[in-house]
Amino acid sequence: MYFHQYKVLSLLCKDTTMNCIIIDDEGMARAIIAQMAGAEENLNVTEEFSNAIDAIKYLNQNGEGVDLIFLDIHMPGFTGFDFIQTIKNPPAVILVTSDKNFAIEAFEYDCIVDYLVKPITEERFKKAVSKARNKKVVPVPQSTTDTKEQHVDTPTEFYVNIDRRLIKIDIPTVNLIEAKGDYILIKTENKNYTVHSTLKKIEEKLPDSLFLKVHRTYIINLKKIIDIEDNSVLIGKDVIPVSRANRPELMKRLNTL
Amino acid sequence: MEQPNTNYIDELAGDDTIFRNKLINTIKDELPQEINIYKTNITSGNYNATADNVHKLKHKISVLGMEKSYYLAEKFEKNLKDNSTELQKEFEDVLSSIQGFVAAL
Image (cartoon, rainbow over all chains, first blue to last red):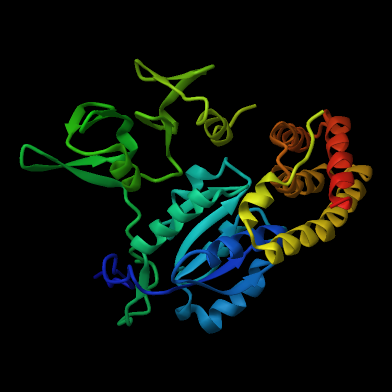
């Protein structure tokens, strides 16, 4: 029998204040995050920690009051992933790191809502916070001591409306999405779908750890890249243009030698 | 050689001089300590620990607007994890550059 410890209150919680903590061993990083958080409406930084151990002690006493954690992965002794595995009921977590190579591992944790690569831009920060707001989780009174079933809505699929039918698309199977006027073309491993929507809308449904907008009209799945030339990437049989502005972010996100 | 700048800091701070000063003072405080730890570790041949130090220094390099140097640091970090000190001199030139720049802020 399953008991859900968490309940997602996406719409109801949109206008409420989120309390967050920052865990990063680097003071400069904490200062930057706190500044960006301060510029956000209804986002309150309650504490900052230079190490995960102190944060765990704090959460043991104040955990219910924390809605969001900005968490550095690469900390001496006790990493961000160690931290997530240690705390019992993790709230929403936004990873903040100089490592682009942990994206796939991050995708395995339900509580992780986004992944920010340092140096953080204000635009990406806002987007990450917006995702956290939409996925805000609150603990529901427990009727069991079973902690294994924790349900947070990290998406693994989304639905598209085609000819009045809602069709499920598994996110990992998506190769790329192309904007075509008022429509988008979603290319998956097996099938293509033309949907009345915009790139901006679908971008919000996709995990940043896996997808990147590389051009005004293209979003690609980073795991599907076969090769990269100067201004293009090959995905399946499609050669996708990469705009000059988006190329640095693409290169940053790839695990290159 | 690429030169450090405060463009990112200025953009982030906007008119908030208190925050700008706080951030610069934090960098002034942390950078020498991080460089000292780096030097201790690389001198003693502790390359894994040195890679961690380079990892942390990378963020300061990027915040100071040195994009090419950031990628150099990234490669050097990887070299250290592979027990190689290739790019050490180039990386330390970057450190000297940002150290001088930060001290003058």
